[in-house]
Amino acid sequence: MRLLIVEDQVKMAEFLKKGLTDAGYSVDIANTGVLAESLCSAHTYDMVVLDIGLPDQSGLDIAKHLRQKGYSNPILMLTAYSSVTDKVSGLDAGADDYLTKPFSFDELLARVRALLRRKAPVTTNNTLLKYSNVEMDLIQRKVKRNEQLISLTTKEFALLEYFIRNAEKPLTRPQIAQNVWDLQFDSESNVIDVYVNFLRKKIDAAPNKKLIQTVVGVGYIFKAVIESAEIL
Image (tube, rainbow, N blue to C red):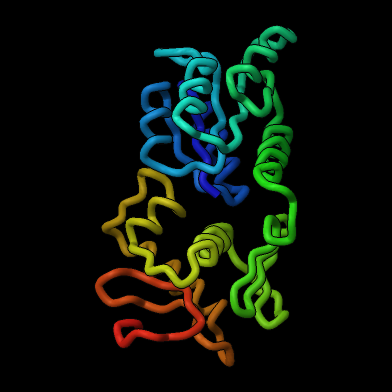
């Protein structure tokens, strides 16, 4: 899942990004409200972690603007203000939850997970992704194929999740870079191909049928049946 951190304090932003990335999320950072709104218009974020105190405008205004523009996913608001009035203001502005600084990262991560679980009614499909004979448990972070447990790194797990959520759709390298890596990722490098190869060796190991296909001139597709001569 892809998150946006809106925080102007560099150390805090990098701390949150590292922790959330280690937890398996793809994370972008905005240090102003203008940039945050621009990124939300250009990309789809599963959640926004929003600091109230920003240099150009209040996080309350940003939350209102995002909601007015149709952003419907969770917003977790961070602030140094802890009064009931402040919390009510944050929730009224469009936040789904409110976390007061200072806070432990474990608590923030628990709030993030809880809000993401609440995005939709909790069903099997909300916590378990399935395609062909591959299963991903998003809560336990376990992957199985043919009931055999497969050990994946954090980035391999994120890559497989993106493939399954977009199964049978040709995906370009820039699309993969944008959704699995952060905005600073160099799409001209061969890192995507390297990680796809790592994932292939684990997911498509014999005697399994190949699911990760190369689409010539495009990128990759996660598909159980090869129907086009262009797919190798």
